[in-house]
Length: 145
Image 1 (cartoon, rainbow, N blue to C red):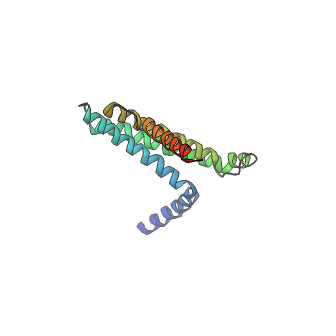
Image 2 (tube, rainbow, N blue to C red; image 1 turned 90 degrees about the horizontal axis):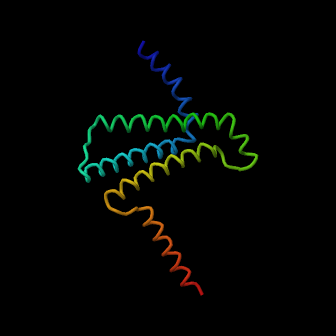
Image 3 (cartoon, one colour; image 1 turned 135 degrees about the vertical axis):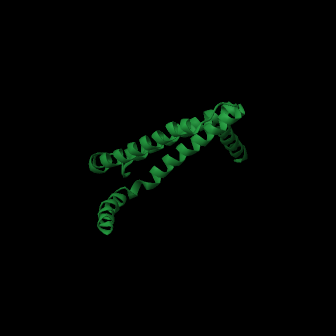
């Protein structure tokens, strides 16, 4: 009985995993940025002496990761069967809508990390990064004849 259930799970799970293989890194990155954002939130709460509870963390983190992953997976299915053919008329990138939504979700999480960082440190690491890039460009322009 146990061997039969295991073989049924394998027969269902392997094709599913193979179908979603092209986007595993996008799903991983969306989940990872969400976890890192949660770590930034915990750091902010500890630094500002706010209350932290595992219940609050679970109620925020798990549904958020679950919803983000479901969004990316469902969009990939729609992309695979419908949207990909239409987008290939204009752009030669596979699964462009899945990639754009994944990128947007990652940007949302990075912005949230930046907000937590700014509340603790007093400055935005994104603004600091842009400033450094502008300085590098300025130095490069000054060095060119």
